[in-house]
Image 1 (tube, helix red, strand yellow):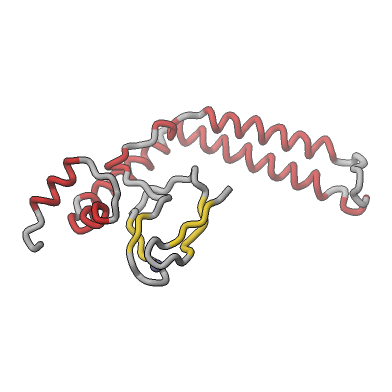
Image 2: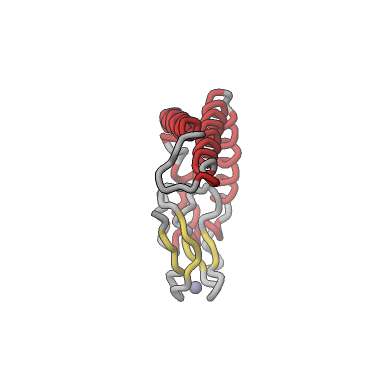
Length: 167
Ligand SMILES: [Zn+2]
């Protein structure tokens, strides 16, 4: 499921990541081994790419809520029942794991829905957007993005030409 990312310059492994995961922070990172800079595939500049359309959908949270409920219910159901191939001394273990996992899923999904409904998530994105805008005002950073092959809209390229007096 997770993908390994290696430094494009020296090939040293930098990290493993979930391709579906998204981070909204500085994209340009330095290799721990050779010090050369690269684009972090996990990261996105909100000011350039915009807020992801699915960020405020509650569908995925509802799915997680139902799934969590099902897992918790299975755990509850298994308590006190004979499980094939499980010594009776640890028969509480599997149901407990199910129950805890299910409850954690339920809590996480409810918190997620509340954060969307109350505008907490929108506020967080506002903050991240402002941080991204600040980064994109830094010509040196924008130039690095361009040199490393990050697809920049025309407006940022024009800004680079204007400030490239020192070469
Ligand atoms: Zn490297």
